[in-house]
Length: 239
Image (cartoon, rainbow, N blue to C red; front, side):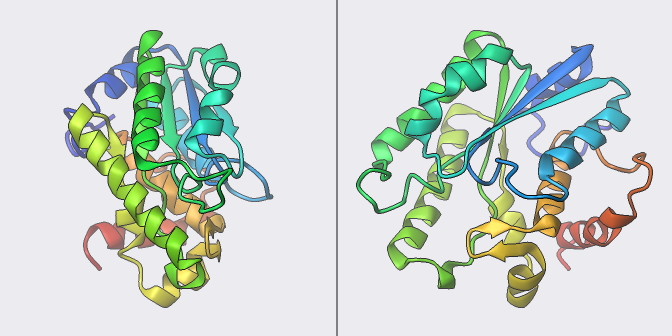
């Protein structure tokens, strides 16, 4: 596994240690509808699983603990049962898109949102696990409620700020999706204003693997992935 090109390699040092040293690797993906498997097709955790399995040549378990609609408050309420119970080596956290929902029963203020992110990181660290935070992919802001769209952008910035302040590994999926042309983004990678389609899931998975120093290069029968693999490479090159 080549880690020399891994982004922000110093932040990912604990993650890389887990990838190298754990004989049987357990990873929990923890989030909302960005993580929840709620429709048929390739999910980004499939790409993660296959890429790590063939890159590392070891047993890898991916446990999906995504629940559609969850904000960080609701996610923390199920943390013990759906994350801690598995004592995973790595937890990939993608939360914040529902904390900005303006409905009173869903909205989470900025100070609480920040604190919830810290609580998640602290609880994972308690059993010696490594945590990775992700921003969401870009959403179709023009098709969203304006207040929620602005709140979403702010929460993604908060994730970046907290990752910088605490030295957390961060995968900025929003920055990658923001490189897509507007029409390409909307019609080739999005299912609707707030959710990715199969291509979007593949792109997310490839970007996660890149940050882990892994790839799908050795995965067999990857014909379905090839157009997105090529586009991912072009985006990274600025095309």
